[in-house]
Image (cartoon, rainbow, N blue to C red; front, side, top):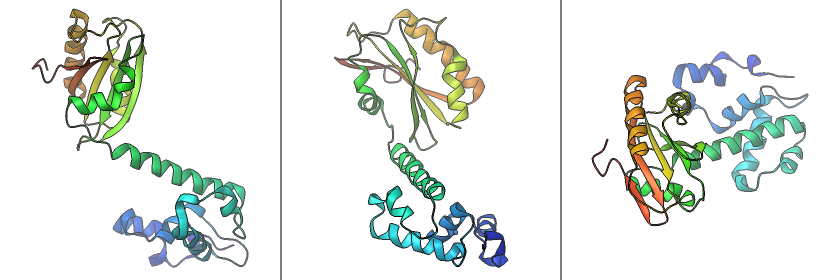
Length: 219
């Protein structure tokens, strides 16, 4: 078998990543990194080009069966390729969403507005305000003792987020911030300064619309 280590140094995808960055790699070089090695009678470059050729025709219809039809490509490697494609797709979909104001937050989380229980949610954002992740942190009646800053910011730190937005729904339909809502916001705002992740807004959701702490000058 011919592996990546058998390529000339200047041709190695790994070497190119180090010297030029991953963006400099051709499609078949990226695929070669995923494969790692070729098979008897078909080196990793040739196998990579064959797979890329099929993907170029219709990558949306790529399936385990189609990949396994390629001579020398087993279920394990075919599954690895499909998993990489799916992961990339999920991240592209996610990072294409951008939050610019409270209405964007409401549009992203509107399904929670009609929930019968209170849901406390977080949206982590990168430096360009693209969504990294949306999570439910807590379900139930909110109070300061139940919303722990470590749970709110742990994921934001793991996401390497530049900013975070918190939100929760009011099943009663009211769009006024309660004393508990204000207290929670102030507590999390203090923690955000300590961890260096900006608390951008706290949005209350209901069937009637939304209330933004940022819009109301409460942040």
